[in-house]
Amino acid sequence: MLIYATSGRRISHNQDTTSCSILYDIKLIKIMIKTAIILAPDDNGLQPIFGTPAVRRLSTLLLQQGIKSIHLVGRVTPFRQLLSDLIPSNAFHQMDDPALLDGLQNTLRLAKDEHILVLKANHVTDILSLTRLTKACKGIGVYFMKAGNEYGDGLYVVGTADLVNALHVLWLPSEFNTKFSERPEIIKGIGGLPYAVEHGYDQAKIAEDRLLAATSLQTEMDDGFLARHVDRRISRFISKRLSHTKISPNQITICGMTIGLVGAFFLSCPGYWLQFMGSLLFLFCVIIDGVDGEIARLKLKATRFGHYLDVITDNIVHVAVFVGIAFGLYNETGNIIYLYSLWLLMGGFCVCVIAVYFCILRLSPDEIKQAPKALRLMALLTNRDFAYLIVALAVIHRLNWFLIGSAAGTYIFAFILWIVSSRETRVALS
Image (tube, rainbow, N blue to C red; front, side, top):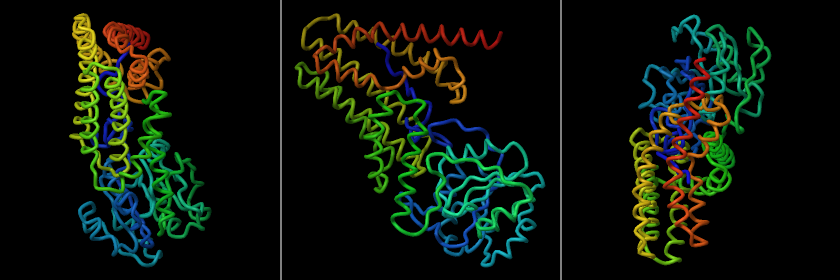
């Protein structure tokens, strides 16, 4: 039986697993863009998305992605107090007339060959769309990702020569085809994002639904089949509702761990129904484990502490479940072989942790995608779909199959993973 070692997902909880610095389900390319200009021709950026004004959410996302300098341009008065802790006072540029934009480039003193990200205060986007846009920037030019109903409304990456043109087009999107020095290269967004939100509940709901759907795209490479098609449907239903509350991702992590430990206790008790209930609680714990990361990404509340908290609590629950199954079988039958199997399984679990870390977790998503099919298959086997197997075996009262199979299967899995990884390394070096 192959088990889920450490956090099989390379994202952090608050990458799914509360995560570090960018704290999403992927490793990003190093962003070349160091300056972003947010245009505010109106106050639509005040529209709340998951309880946070769109412009504040956008500014937080840009800072998390390594943007060093953010400037707010336009009718900035409604935003000053809202963003004073994120943007320095000299980065607010009050302009009520688009004609005043012409002098902005001299004010900012940008490098001649610098790439600048230009967007509007009411744009709602996610990390995948931002990454696709930045990856498309092969050199100085005009790169555009549509966001609004009007074609010129969207995200731009431009050189200094086209900066003012991009700002004019965002203020008046109808000028899209007439302003730029060269034809913009159009980049398609992901999952209906970015989206230009305006005032009104319906607009905010559309933006929130698209952001929620985007969380699935961020994790689909690491999710198993059942996690993708069952767990995520349930976790997104829960996350959508909890995202409008003050519950933090870390609180959800602790709640999930508690559910898992209660499930492990039930598994340790003799009796069919208690063990069946314990297996269901463990499965629910696995589903809840997706909620903390989804909320962290939706509300941009991922932290390094949350990442480690999630990894630690995951593995505490895993060990507790294995111990619970072994003691439940021993208490039910009195057969000491189940306790010996537990010790063997714990050793195999440690071996799998080491193998998965060195062979899979250290690889970037791009490296995983480019890896041969055998290694990608091994990566998929590190997900938590095994929770469904525990439920199925509890239904037929055969949890001993899981315990004994896992005790041997962990070592077999680690051995095969090392062999596959070593072979691919030799091929790459030859």
